[in-house]
Amino acid sequence: MSEVEVDVYSYDENLKKSWWLFLASGIIGVVVGGLLIFWPSSTITVVTSIVGFFMIVTGVIRFLVALFDSHADDRWIMAIAGIFGIVLGVIVMKNPEGTIKVIALIVALYWLISGLVDLFRGLTNSQLPDRTLRIVFGLMSALFGVVVLVWPAITVGVFAILVGVYAVFFGVLEILTAFEIKKA
Image: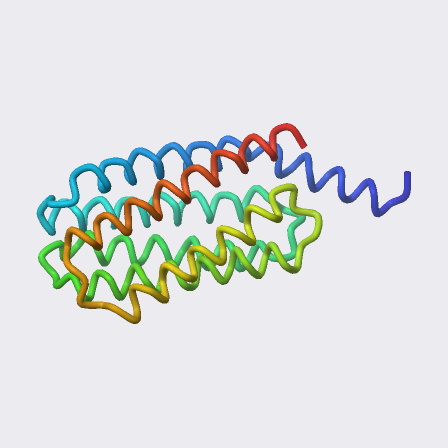
C-alpha cells in the first residue's frame, strides 16, 4: 500500500466517524420538508421559524462536518457555508413578520451558495464517497436558489411547498450519503 492510499483510508475513517451527522441532517430535512408540504397554508411566522430553524441546524451540521473531516482540503468552505447558514437562520428567526420577498431572497442566496459549495466539492474532490450525490444536490440546490431569485414575489404557500420539496430532497440525499459513508 502506498502513502497516498493510506491517506485516503485515513480520510475515509475520519469521514466515517461523522456519518451520523449526515443521517441526523437528513431525518430533520425530511420531517421539516414533510410538514411544509402538507401544511403550506401555515402562517408566515410558522413557515419562517421552520425555515430559520432548518438553516441553523444544517449550518451547525455543515460546520461540525468541517471540524471532524480534518483531512479534507475544502473543509474551510464547509465551515464558511455552515457559519453562513447559522447567521442567516438567526436573522430569519429574529424577524418572522418580515416580508416573504426578503425571506425568499435570504433562503435563495443560501441555497445558491450552499449548492455551489456542494457542486464545487463534488467536482474537485474525487475521494468523496458521496461525490455523485453532492454534485446532483449542488445542482438542485443552486437551481432552487435561482428559481426563487428570479421569481421573488411567489406566495407563502408556493414558497412553503418549494422549501418543503427542497428539504425532503436534501434530507433524502443526506440519509443516502450517511449510509454510503458508513459502508465506505
